[in-house]
Image (cartoon, rainbow, N blue to C red; front, side, top):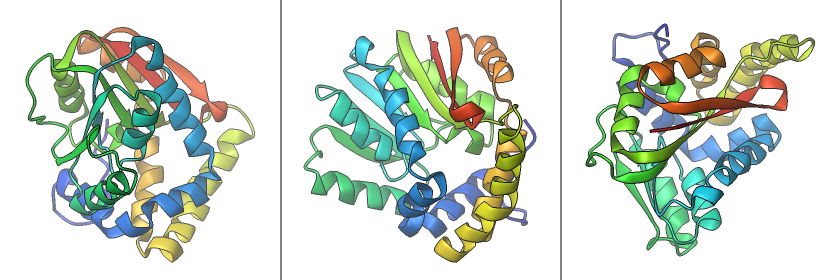
Length: 241
């Protein structure tokens, strides 16, 4: 996967990603709902629903951001302990406030953490989730290896990530919207056009569909598969340790 960075400076990708999300944290949830027309909630619910039959008791949500997935996990899995990690302190601050307002502090804990250097023991979690985060890893393989390490044997990985539509006319409409319309709206709403230009660029570089399954398989994951959502705008990838 080619390294795509949000900004045109010499800082490492990881540092730029943290800066980008700190910049847009205050408007992140609102802008995402606006730009996706609310469809992102359907995608997340479908991804989380895939964990229900496994009934995991300890779940790690990587790149948790403002804790949208962590909160929805708690609703679907009321007996689970959920830990979310992220490298953006401002996103985490917003997530913690939401968790406190919903009285979920006993079931959800948010921690500052690097997805490529997780501060957890081997075989600690029954499930690991990531929503729209793996594109942002500085080293994709390293991040996936870390998640594999902390998963218990038989534990499930669920990843929700943007992909490139391959059918006409969705493919063409997706390109126009993500490349030209979305950065303009993002600039107006969040004052950071680069953040939403980066979204398009990073989706183009991401090894989606079967290529991503190959990455997972090469790293030791088993039973890997994907579910195409909304004509290929995003995919849900699942695998087991």
